[in-house]
Image (cartoon, rainbow, N blue to C red; front, top):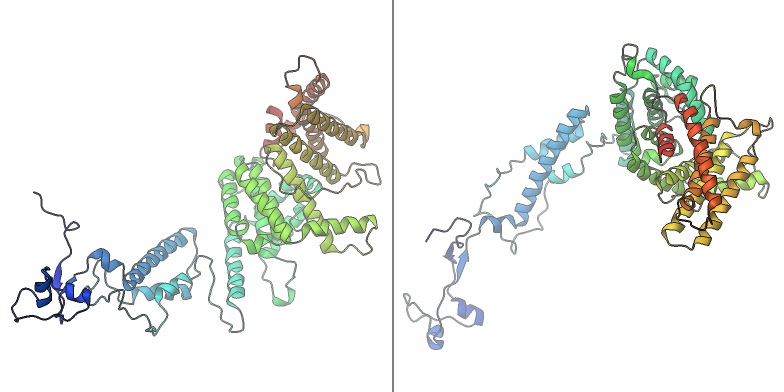
Length: 540
């Protein structure tokens, strides 16, 4: 028979020191008398004809030793030490320097003289039921010091006793984040070229989805660039100036410009950027990690605008799942900041229902919330996903200005509101609603689209455009909404031709959509933020 392995052997035993009672007498709690000193059985066991077994002490195995509090703490310290080393190696890869406070916390574990792995002293180990836990340590345990170390966030110990640790950590973390972001800015010479390329798409984007804090023109891009490299004295600090978010929005604008222009073929001209594809990916991942994932930064109005600009960059990278998650996060922070209430208050004051002046902050919140709702409705309709702003209808603004020109933002809001109706139509079909209800809803949406088209001058509608304008995109989307409205009934098996009108309308809109796509697509830059959306609409 093969011998037992060390893990299969029974625990070694030895007679407990200072014990005179046998196991039977100890359990019965009676006196254990022995006839002689060398007797093999006590008198009580002899009278009851029981086996007299001496009390023994099991020597602890490795598994038993590891279950003691001291061993568990030692194991925890080793795990924290391993994690600290892993974090330190990751910090070295991304260029994050370790501060003095965290270095002391890390070295504290190395200097405590812990025994090596597997060298626990068995004889000195105290059992679980007798270990003294009331003894207070003379210094904080090093494993707890490491658990509260903030090297990952780049925070430093607060030097001012009156300053709270959270505020000091937040301030230092922002400085560290700004240093990382600013490191990826291009040179001043390249920035001038990029700003001139970005002016056109910035104007189109601002007309459709207004942005307040982010740069809207090439001049604002250059001004933000220069200010980020200037030393700000305490006397000149502006409360509205948030360098981390300003730097993030500028980098995103640069990345979007690089994505939708021929920067890939101009590496010799823009040496500070290099390969545009790699630059776009690097900026996207960095802003997502340092800004989008940080609640303290993204919860502000400027932070929400940065997140919306980040979404624009993802349209060119087709990251649909990530975009849907981030838009839901944006909606949550906007609701916590009171943006829906600001939009309602803004409309009440505009209509005269509530007296009061429209201040700048209220206007900013209302405009930002309408942009969020419009983006949410258009994205949700494209991917047939639930709305995050379902209970926040967009206000109906005037479609024409005083000169009879179409106001792009107002038209986008009307289209976004109709897009939410199309989502309701999709849910009705999937939930098995009667055909007549679906037909009535389709006709209601069709009536809204026709009414919207009749509200603008007939001269506004055209297919061929000399250059890219927001009106060309809006007219293309209008035809797409008509197709989406009628396509379900148009494809229904209809031997009685009950849905002949829907089929004819859908066919006419599809042909118009194809003509507009052929005229619009060559005008779009290579990586324009709406290019993939327009392609998807045309081919589906």
